[in-house]
Length: 513
Image (cartoon, rainbow, N blue to C red; front, side):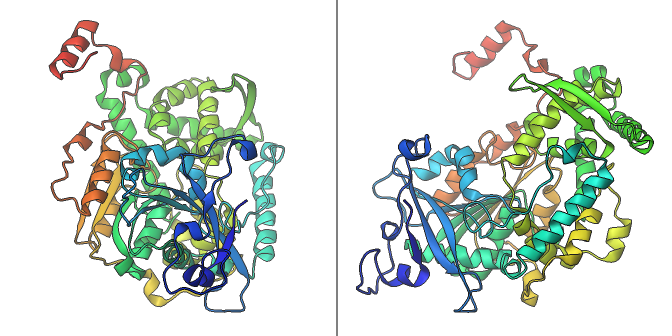
């Protein structure tokens, strides 16, 4: 079982002791061994993993506000003499669970964990930290015409806003960083390092702004500052990413020969699907699931075709399949495209977004930068018009009160490592360039073969580990990032070297082929 402890008791008392103490509590005060195989059917992520909950006020300014629990996972450092500035890792979304993310990414931070604890905190409103979720469209609903789907979806959102209206104003980034600092204090750390991906970079930036004396360093992967105004620039950035992939295809002879201009073919497919939508003739695709090999079917519309392309561009592995999937679909063979849709949706579902918390952030923070003119004039990414769809929800979403300085660009002296992927459809390098203006002690790295999130690619995990160990990028070699190149866009194209040339290359590097 996991214990719960309020901030006050964390600061002054050990669990189970009535005596007040002046020292800050240690992790053992309220964290204990995570449930093991007997309870969950799975072993803990690492030996010694600890779980627990910290109780905070939903409205920190009101002592009479209700209590909510913040879920915490601690993966202890391997060294018995660990450094006392851990790495806090923050999920994106907004609305994703950092603790659920831990199972996928903790191995990439193994070098960091040699000397430092890894701390994962479910942001309030996500995961197991008082999650705020709305009713979802069912599988049957997804077979309905898109206009009917949207009408039903908006009904669910109206009901959700009403259900959580008293709470939603307190589920913003500002409240999230207050919780993070409460966790820091409760665990007894004086300073921390923060790593954030996508929206998690906004959390890390805001923490560095509000708690500069407690921030040792920040790693920002896929910059999403408030100025990005999620939805306002997504169509522009998605089209730029797809155009970049098309350019890569044109300069790879095998890809250009096999698939031609995939941007033009994407436009052709979209126009065809749009015509079918207008005629009320659904395009149903029967295909085998690429992992489970079960027979599946997909109703392919112009809008979910656009969503598929957008989601596939998030992933380096799925981007590789886009030229072939698009080229075959133009020839009216949609099976690979449908299989790609399955994979993209599964990757998206792994984030397990808490949509009420998602809109609380989006509507109270990003919509500050969006005007009625933006909503009417911002072009869609093919059929995906995220700004119009979300503007309808933000029109009735409960409003939060945030300080005026909240929307000012962050200025901080904290050492910062800024990471970007060239094919990122939502947080491209332009945002890292903008944020860097306020971070004089920052270094920017761009992975030419990267998409959304590059901390897991090539040598980047080692660079992050060295940056955290030193507390700066001084003497950290970064040339290896240039080796993260775009993958061949024709499967098998990178295997065309003869075995002898591979052996010769390996021998030259002193390794066995």
